[in-house]
Length: 284
Image (cartoon, rainbow, N blue to C red; front, side):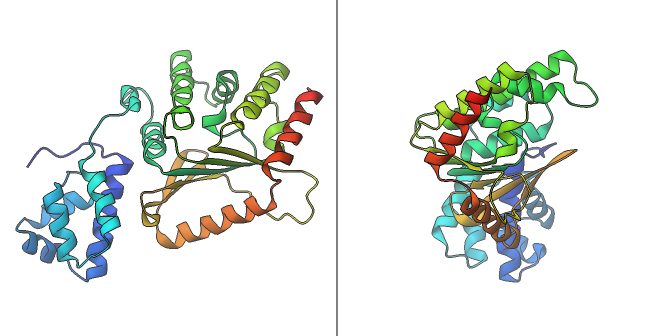
């Protein structure tokens, strides 16, 4: 067996989590699964922890042992296990915190992306000046070299919007996120203009929740819902002050899908959202 990974990626850990869920659903212990596969119990633990990889042959054998007949799910798990191509984010490994890399990898593999933001423009839609202002406000202050690395990484995340075959992307923003001046007046105006420009793409939708909406309790929770190859592999990303959290339990996925649909229903349609953004640009 190859050496164990020192720091599995979020994608590698998710594969292990899904295999453990299949085992739990089958009512088998790790020891029983190992015996059926012809490996040791620690090897099953290592696979389920993302500490080691699993071949397509072994993964399909495990699926059979677990009586899993969902071929779409199995094929998606096989792809997660065997697609080991290194993405652009790997150049930042060791230079930026791991969550930055995990987020970029998640976005890269997502079939769709839906975001809700109340105070900030979503990362993939930010201009360079806006992103630099966001990172400049961090406490403690970032060294200039790391700040520029974060800005460059954020700009490269735009590949999910600009690449050939990019999946659908929808952002629901509160009007507050459009009005708060993260940088100066010029940077704010340029950001809103860039937001209008990106709305011209057929696969990108930006919708706004206006201040004057009556009766909006909302969720007041910023989040990203990344579509997996199958719904069971969807992921919700939640930002906290000191960490980025990935949520993948079926119950929580269902909750966050409901929350997203709630804020989406409260937002203006695409045309009226563009009109509001255009009006805000004139005010600047």
